[in-house]
Image (tube, rainbow, N blue to C red; front, side, top):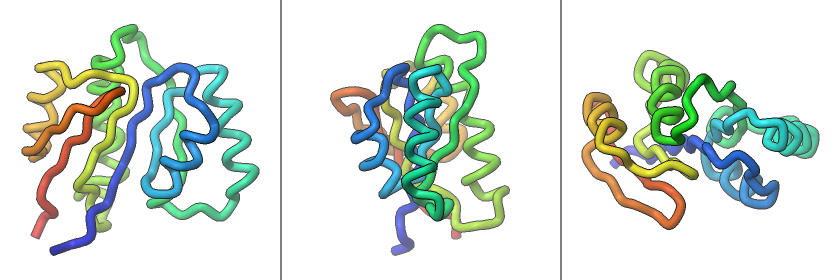
Length: 133
């Protein structure tokens, strides 16, 4: 079985630095770029300047959506372009979402991206798909 590559999308507006560090050590994190989170990201980058793609951090601009599930859905295309099959690497097979529920429209879009398993967590959900062969 191929190694599972995890990407996390964090939509919590004031994500704690300790949680970010823990999450970024095991996955690439896409962190919503609120003022608080940008400061947390800068501190992370200063502390871990040599982080690799699979254990690093990207901030993204929170578009016009106020609903976390809609913001997550709007970010999926960029995540897929950077970490999916078009990126030319082993694509991510696990998506961990923090700060957004698994709304029906979001689940439908994830199913279009071949995610087949969904587990709700205390603060979001985890979706998995099989690695492309």
